[in-house]
Amino acid sequence: MRSMYFTEEHEAFRQSFKIFLQKEVIPNVDKWEKEGFIDKEVFKKFGEMGYLGLNYPEEFGGLNLDLFYTVVFLEELQKVNSGGFAAAIWAHTYLAMTHLNAEGSPKIKENYLIPSITGEKVGCLCISEPFGGSDVAGMRTTATKKGDTYILNGSKTFITNGIYSDYLVVAAKTNPSLGNKGMSIFVVDRESVGLSSTQLVKLGWKASDTAEIAFDNVVVPANHLLGEENKGFSYIMQHFALERIVMGVNAHARAEYALEYAIQYMSERTAFGKTIDKFQALRHKVADMASEVEMCKEFNYSIINRLDKSQYVVKEASMSKLMSTKIADEVIYSCLQMLGGYGYMEDYPMARLLRDSRLGPIGGGTSEILREIIAKIIIDKKEYKPIT
Ligand SMILES: Cc1cc2nc3c(=O)[nH]c(=O)nc-3n(C[C@H](O)[C@H](O)[C@H](O)COP(=O)(O)OP(=O)(O)OC[C@H]3O[C@@H](n4cnc5c(N)ncnc54)[C@H](O)[C@@H]3O)c2cc1C
Image (cartoon, rainbow, N blue to C red; front, side):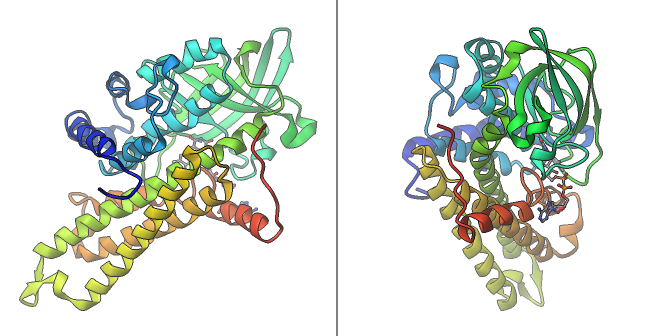
């Protein structure tokens, strides 16, 4: 057993999910990395197996399982070694769908959440804008009420699944003069007139179709508002805890993958008449890295355990993402060094891992912003409260 949090059922799920990835994903990853997007049909295959609804209610086709199944899912996705592929899947499942489930009306759940769980519809979450991502409250996209519609104008950027998603979960100002108290969330159909997207070229996450999106007088039915008008900022903040712990788990999993690979490589590579895993300088480095990764893992599991019991873990989730992404970057950088020149070659996994991992401290709340949140909680005694 990997940890006290996992049962035999979790481990059986891990084994069957690994087999699925081996068959449906791993043979295609290099092609998807080259093409810049993944084959959309793979979502349906994930959906058929129930993987997109692990933590969602059974009435919408989900499996209503505890969050440790999600942990297994995220960990194994990272071990495919395509941050872009993993992001396409988890951005749909844990960014876009979270809002549909928490704030969607019965009609929205029927039309968007159910087909998202089956993989027939793919979603994305649009918060960041060209003029600023960290300052969520400063966003400029507007949604102006007109009869029984809203008219959307503005733009979003760096959106994962921004090209091929079927619907977009979009944050916009419904009352710009109220700042963060004047923001709302909408579901917008891909086919909407006036919506356009442009794929962006990136350092890593190559298999993910990151895009800039423009809204030019896009008409959105009023019943596509998620939850209540002007409550969007609280909804975003509410879901940040799950998003950030997801990114913390992703980070410890890719660091663990890098370390396992490096240890295996070191046991085979020889220099000066012995395998390089006999050099004390490298052995101590491995010992340090393994200790750091293990600490992140156990911390992340303990936060997942609390989140699963509906505890409010905004501080701990911020700490998880801050430290796990930092340690993952450092570990992967050092593991690449263990491979010498081969670490720098595309035929070996470290080059892609290094590129993909670099996004960890940026996407979904930069490390600087996380430090701000943590500092406000522990120094200023600021209390972030759940929505009641
Ligand atoms: C590949 C990729 C995928 C992404 N996917 C999505 C997605 O699906 N949906 C989505 O909405 N967004 C997505 N993002 C956007 C991501 O969340 C933002 O890039 C991130 O929040 C930072 O925003 P920014 O890039 O505008 O940087 P800025 O906000 O302009 O920040 C620039 C720098 O200033 C620092 N900074 C800003 N404010 C402060 C402060 N108060 N104190 C100290 N330092 C500060 C930042 O930490 C950063 O180092 C994605 C980004 C990338 C690169």
